[in-house]
Image (cartoon, rainbow, N blue to C red):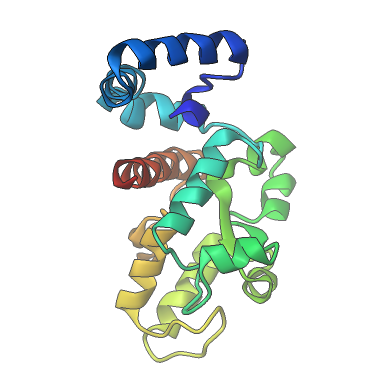
Length: 206
């Protein structure tokens, strides 16, 4: 909660002192529950957090929380059958752009737009390299064909149900493999909401 809301980023000593006094006076559980209820209402997860995730900083607290959520929930890497996000983070994984960076650059988008955290997924290097600069409509079509008996081009997943589950782990809409590839900004908005819900799931499981 403190990471997501920046509780101790302004004047940490003052905030810590206030919290310690409140804990002593009201008890840890009662005070923590009241603070969390106030700081993280239902509207935070559906409205505020997706807006806060409109950032290109890979070190933003929201992207760090998202990766922590994936680790805690045991998610697999993008298009990986066996490699977990935790494995990837321990081995300095690649950050793959769902909508390839070079294609977006050629469309005139600035770095702050094509490097949005909502355009990032954690992937094995060979998967990232294999996709390269292919348009999402191209490589998601190849993935659909791969799960229909076609040649394996990206990762080892060959079953549609497994692919759909993997996309859900990475907060990607399953409709992508049906050829429903939205405009870039629409995709970012949709994925921020999905990423926010994953963080919420993780938070509620703590």
